Length: 137
Ligand code: HEM
Image (cartoon, rainbow, N blue to C red; front, top):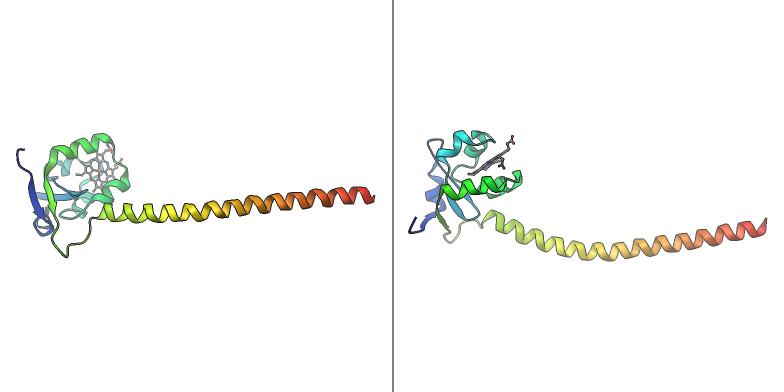
């Protein structure tokens, strides 16, 4: 393909039948019409996201590299986002999850220190308690 086509969400959404099925995965538009009958996961799941952004559904399954190679062969072009269009699914979820992951790992680190410290203090106290009990006998 020499030139890259650009399709708006509305244009992609028009291709939502089994005989004419487009899908967006990671901001690229794919024509999956020829693949519907061959999909090992069945046609139903593809029709579900037909004309829409299937990035999340595609990644949730954990498709193989082979599946990604098939995608390459079905490429139609890029998504043209218009003002007011919803944000890309996969990118939005990655950025928010990485942000929450980094902040939660920070607080987990502090919590972990507190638990280790508390465990040490309890062990120390128990050791002394057992010692004093033995001495008093
Ligand atoms: C055009 C996009 C897609 C392509 C090229 C594709 C391709 C494939 C391929 C080659 C497999 C076999 C296992 C593997 O190699 O990973 C597979 C399995 C599967 N796919 Fe997709 N897939 C696409 C989209 C989707 C979507 C949107 C869903 C939605 C949930 C989906 C659901 C599944 C499931 C559930 C399986 C597992 C089937 C099984 O092992 O029983 N796929 N797909």
